[in-house]
Amino acid sequence: MTTEEFQKIVLEELRELRVGQEELRKEQKELRVGQEELRKEQKELRVGQDELRKEQKELRVGQDEIRKEQKELRVGQERIEKDLKAVIEQTADLTEFRHEVVEGLEEINSVISRLEIATAENWSDIAKLKAVRRMY
Image (cartoon, rainbow, N blue to C red; front, side):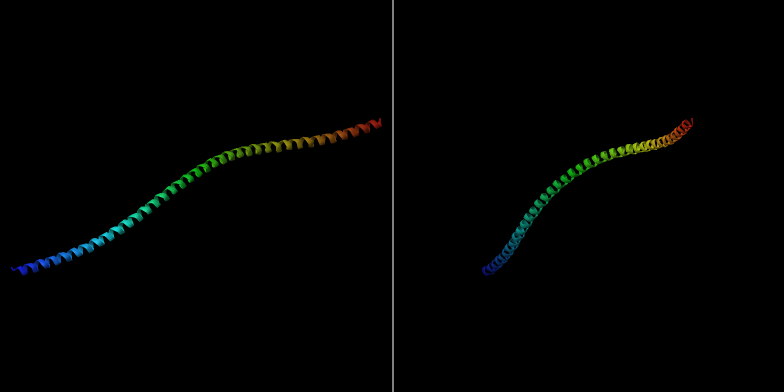
């Protein structure tokens, strides 16, 4: 092999190396661009994750408020049930009292009727006695 042939082979190899090197530079540049895009997307994911954490915290606060209000509603409901039981008991007592009063009034009316009859009979007897007295 001559020097010229050797130089020609070496130059061809050098050209191939340069072409390969250029291709590597292009691929490296593409990789950097891709890496930058990945970093950007990763940053966006972190922001989204932070927002999710914030919203999750807000949900927990809201859930705690709901639990507190639910507890207050239970206490209020228990108080209403207690008051309702008292009203039912009072209603039963009043119903019984009313029944007793009605019976008492009926008895009083009966007594008044008997008194009126007795009074009428007494007036009749008095009138008869006065009439007899005038005769004698």
